[in-house]
Length: 504
Image (cartoon, rainbow, N blue to C red; front, top):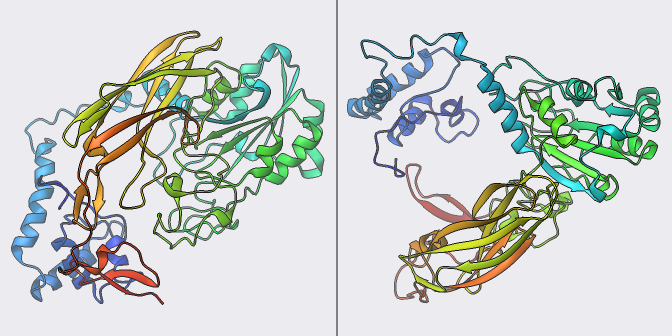
């Protein structure tokens, strides 16, 4: 509720109200837990599937025990009714009541699903312009991997109105001119034999979003899902990739996954690698278009892909600064950096300019850069804006993304890409002053293709605050430390406050 003064409806995650008593043991009883949740601003409980009786009983017990007042409950109920009224649920005529199934899965919806799939592909590697493939130069194509012949959903994906498998879409695109052979795996050397006989091999591998196990544990330690943490980062199917590549070095890997993998061998050997999410019913069509050049990849990675498990600290080590986590503070060499993604066209960046060389904390600066598609095919490009504080009282990120622009370019076209950066976007939480602070200093303005592929740099002076030394005559809350060792943050009280305790 501190985020906004609007009477918004706050809904719990599924089973979260029970978890604070059963799994997390934060409160001793459901009555205490439910009362605390309502007082913290929650309005609606998602718990016990469709059975409300246990939730009602817990709230009634809390009310009877004086843990809640009727006003607390009335406030939550008013938020619920406010949303329902604003949605027109109680209006004499609901304009949504006349919508029929004909409004679902329209041609426009199908086109949007395909475009969404097209735009999310990330080209991780493309040695010697292996992609796109030229259909006219092929007579036999091998498609390998179980994921080529299925479309998978996560918990919240809904039900596909139809499905276009990658294998079927590739077969459709090749028609009668190119023979397409398929093997799900390398049992009895099937995949290797097909790859050896083909002009090129496409290996489509990746995770199952739910490990094909419901809520149960995942068999593979490198797989994970909601409520199940990954224990490793290797790709189980990398052995299949190695077998196919040994039979035919002209191998393209398509990785359909929910998370990064340490695919070091694949990156070192295979000439072309495409990453995709489990992108919905139009994945097959979109992938076939990408592989054969009917659309161009321009997606970028929203995560750092680490080269080794040793690059990451313990999963419970949440301090990203001290533990050097994420692109902000990681000082090693990743397999693929944050923001990485290649295209089928070469792009050049030039003429970075700022509308001002210096601004104060209340002002903003306009940043412009000229970008040119020097290739022979149209493509999108994602231009990324990062900043870096040259000097600071505290440890600041190596680079921090402040904006990006995805823009379409025809072959040979030059466009001016513009960003607006407000000084307030450079603020950080200063524990000395216990407030958001725009620190005075010089900031590097970095324009790049990824966090590791900076093309142009300029300097911006910001006339902000100079953070003074601590006033040692005043009390300082322990949570506002500059550094720590052997300590952890704990609750001061359950309703509010943070304290520091010795770590075990």
